[in-house]
Figure 1 (spheres, rainbow, N blue to C red):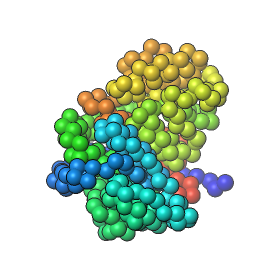
Figure 2 (cartoon, one colour):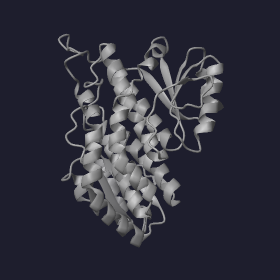
Figure 3 (cartoon, one colour):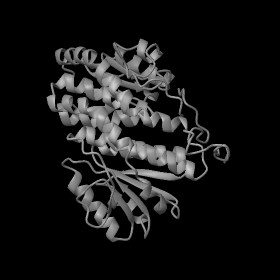
Figure 4 (tube, helix red, strand yellow):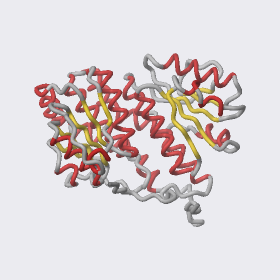
Length: 355
């Protein structure tokens, strides 16, 4: 196994910033740029979707972009009642199987827009009758050029290997389209408030998690609904940057089998949101805490688990999205504290072009 990249001994954490840290700090500005600059286009796409009235939505993505797609799956199903399915890109790129997607919406997400399998799956969805909307950070990419409506997520250049601001802006773009499509005024208002609230989230300090991670080989991250997608994104970033295992679970499933791994001191992070699932997640978290696990939860309702600070955005969907921002900051600092370089994860590169 290759050794993880270590920070340059000359790196001064007080005066120098990693690319990842810079890009975390840019999240509020990137979101503001999107909310301001994309509003008119989102309204146009929303009008097209109202006229078309797709009965189902299919998503195409990998990695962090697939976590964004999972977030939007929950948002679309909760807001519009339409079922959302994730399409395996290999169905088109490897197996070349046709799909029947007449009148569906195909939502493709890729930071670079260059992965051949994502492009192939979008092409196949269009051939099967779907309307293709792509979310990318590169306006002239193959994915953007091959879609019916190409959305530039306006995150700006992202140099860090670990996607941060592009993940957030992919979700914000999708939520803007959804709010315009469904006419959801509370969601529209929440998105207008979001950039300022993301700035608050950047300043949150989750370093209290760190001591519980030193003696254990793994971390469980729990969520429900949209926060389940955030749990998957958090687990991926923890593995990428800190060279330590993490696993995301639904708080409804962790007690069905994975709990057998949770002994005394085992670290668990519960990503609770101010929605209908908060009570059940808190109940699970407190149960694990009473069993001796080291449990931290973003809720004021916990009795036995430890409370983590969070930003209450006033809307369940933006509440969930804001949770990833302090986690990004936490893992970037934890990696540096361990002498690791979060800008150079083992075996990873910025753009992965899979087939």
